[in-house]
Image (cartoon, rainbow, N blue to C red; front, side, top):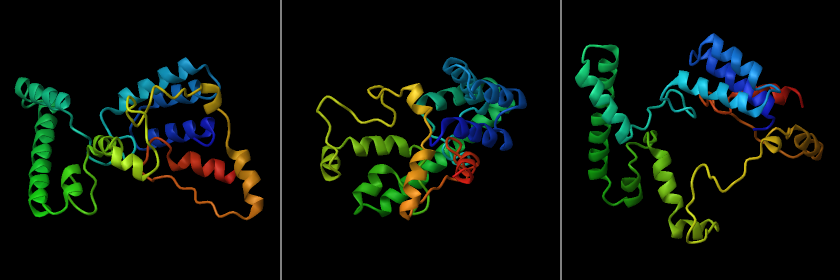
Amino acid sequence: YTYSVIDEWGAADFWYNHGLIPKDVYNDLLSACTGATPSKCDDAQNAAVASMGPINPYAIFDDVCLSPSVMQLARARAHSAPHSPYGVVAKQLEARQREYEKQRSAQSSLTMNAPEEHEFGAVSQDEAPPCIDNYVTAYLNRRDVQTAIHAELPPNIQWSVCSNLVNYNYADMGQSIVPVYRRLLPHKLRILVYSGDVDGIVPFPGTRVWLDAL
């Protein structure tokens, strides 16, 4: 976040205008996450996440990672109610997973001389596999990789995307970084600021607002 109040508004605006959350949840986010207590904002965000369902919030149109628990639930619903919406969607999920595994297997047979690509399951040059976060976590916990990027961890510490060892203080997160940009810009520094157009975590509406405020 650059400024949490603006970025959280931007996320709520993005979710609502992409049809991911209903109006009442959107209104709760606006009221709870603009000066309210952290717990109320957390409750509103949890309700929004529940409304969105199992999507990839960092790329809302991408395929999701189908973990074993998700596939077990899909199979149970498809078996118990095969013609219901749940059953139809569950069958579609299973079919997509089988097709992905088939593509991955075919790609692997063609790339036996490229162990890293085979290991992390890339299906093409342009497409990242749905479970790429799992692969990245495994990759960044390799000691040779940590040595290469000068980020070696103690033997008892595992790198993870989100770490409970880091204390994300709510007050610190609420501080605006806009004044830092204002101090840097007079020095004629070239700064690239971008937000993904399908990123639902730090989407472009909030980024556009604080950029206009500089």
